[in-house]
Image 1 (cartoon, helix red, strand yellow):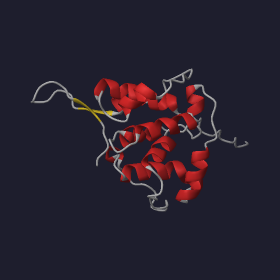
Image 2: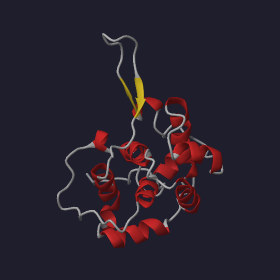
Image 3: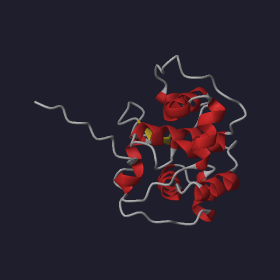
Image 4: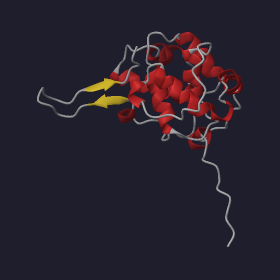
Length: 183
């Protein structure tokens, strides 16, 4: 009996029916961070350390330390790149991490277009529009970021994955809160 090669996990681009873009940002960040092929794991760890606390977990201690030369906008965009193997947690972490008034929304728009991740950011921005309509940078992205459609969006986070929903409590009806970055 022969062992078959396992096919690699599908990329986010494949799940969306899109063409994967080879990201210059990912190449630069892989070198600058020292994470190289482990960049996706490094990005998740750094985003959690910088404020996406809802997704705190044990990360590989062998990952390189944070590099303050890498901006929050670059980390957030890199978490949304379509070339990586599909990982819903990476998108959820990006949603909380970028939910901060410290994010430069217009710079984020520029990076999103350059790195071809507008559909992901606009999906998150549209969800934020229902639960935190004034939350930046999402309000600016909804107004300024050009819409680029992809054939499928069912691989993107459901609204329940980017909010905290209490259910019925002694205080009354269920409460839904957008997961914003801890600062």
